[in-house]
Image: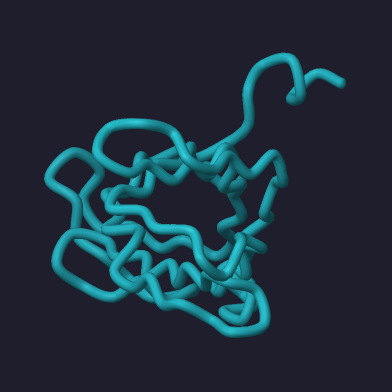
Length: 118
């Protein structure tokens, strides 16, 4: 019998934000488990579950918002599916105006409940 263990991973999700001339902004997501860079089919140690191996990981990033001095200046309504078996999906091109200035980025891991059941 195959056991499925749901483990909440500790991700350091955004380590890189770069301005991209074509799209305006590229967000690169870099998942980690504890202090290790995450990789499918690798083993990780968890104090609650012991030794853990994750063979499939997919999740959504949504609600990307940009702020300048605490005020919302841009809101992206798109959803981005990230699949750990395809690390190219961890690079998110966000179309923003080229002259937009921001000093803070916020986003959701997952989608809102209304979208989830639609």
